Image (cartoon, rainbow, N blue to C red):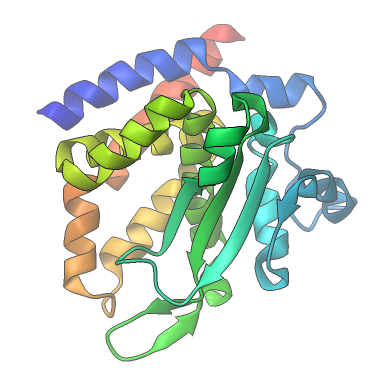
Length: 234
């Protein structure tokens, strides 16, 4: 019940007041389909203030192209061996919370070097492109959420995230909603389906995704609501 009510509220908020995708279109920053002429060169503009491992550079820049609000934001994408039961994790850099203003804060997105299956580990860059794009896009949704919070609020956010499952659900819905509002809805759905339908991903991880995150159907509802809103705006 809580998730359904929260999704409705976020849908209204994001779809009628947050037009980031429109900002991208009218500012000349609209993402180009990867592989089209000039797409790779165009995407390099999103590398500003970013540190990205070479093996995921192209897909990361493509994900960043959907978030024009993050163009001037410092973000380090870092490979890690393990991230406490997560595949990716977005966090502000602690020093920037204390010593920098909101506009100049820096962030890191930790990325598991390997996706751990029940019988093997596979390099993260070997995931289907849409799945990896959706996964990174979700984390960028977290970063965009952080941009709108004060440093004190973010510190409280961190405490609540580790103490309350209800708060985790709110935070993850918010991140997904930002990603959907920016045009990554189909990629987020691809990521959710990949996790939930993979026969070799640990069941405890699937249960975590089922319990704390929006389902593919709920994401689809957000996408359809956004499409209806776009039609009304034409």
